[in-house]
Image (cartoon, rainbow, N blue to C red; front, side, top):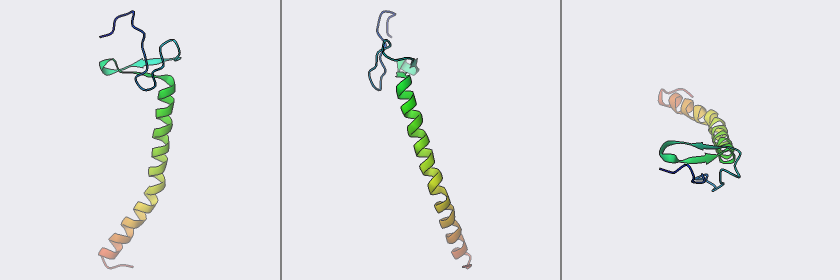
Length: 73
């Protein structure tokens, strides 16, 4: 456990508490800064968008397979 005098650092980018606008401490003293949180939010949004783009293709393929399986074309 860190003492009160220790300088906190972001475990992702290394920014200190003196550089970062905000540091969030989590389980087992893991720490993340506001900039890394913003980056994570962007990554998650991009990946969700990619899944959303693929979903119609997957649904269409599933319908085609189901139709073929029951003998419809």
